[in-house]
Length: 371
Image (cartoon, rainbow, N blue to C red; front, side, top):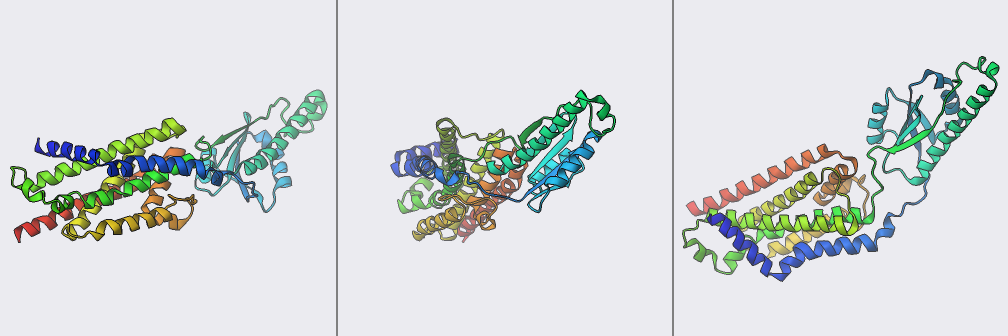
């Protein structure tokens, strides 16, 4: 029970410090609110002409010739078509950005799937062309129904058909708003502040000269370390949950179907940061007062590169160099595309970092005790 007693004591001591509450809870809520509302204009979609490449598959043989004729008439260097083996294959290529959209041409009509990041203007262009084909085809079908004798000379046109267009996003999600962007980015940034907390778990006891007095009790150094670590992580986990709930209920932030996995990845990022800070504290023997300042500078730089202060596209390679940017990118895949498998790699890496740093810290302290 000593470990849990120490953990509770650590939580109580931290809650008494107003600065800790400000950094761990008030600051992320403030940043999400201010940045999300103030920089919302950065997310207004601009009308732009994009090269469009549409995959298509035809499941009704009677529509083969009419659609081929339509395709040849409208196809240009900037508006192209590519045949795909199936609708599932086309949707996969859309997700991998090889295609802009994919359309299935069949008896049920034209069913169009497009990339979620596609601009409204480009969507309107695609749907406009396909609506044109739909309208023309329905007109020809109606005329053939009125004049059956002519229909016999046009076997490629069915005598009774209704062509409609149904459009869907690949993941069925709305475009990202500024609140959604900064809810993810700011939390990813704040989890990195675990570096500061980890570097002061035991060094704060040394500076206040309470460590030696604690170790004179039946509590071992391992119990003290484990208790303080559990207390720090538990409190951070609580503040993380409050921040996510704040963005959910105040700004209607949708954390997706796999919100628990998203929470878990944020938590792993924080644990890895705390462990890394702890390892550096062990390397410097807890005597480096400049460690906190160094970590603050590093966090600021990584946050700027990772898009925590101003919006940066996920397609920028250098954004994902920063752990803040990389975590934000993979979490968006889980939130907006229901791609929970994207979280597996970063989660595994963060676990390895956490275990490696804690193990390394244990080796450092044990070696010193032996010496």
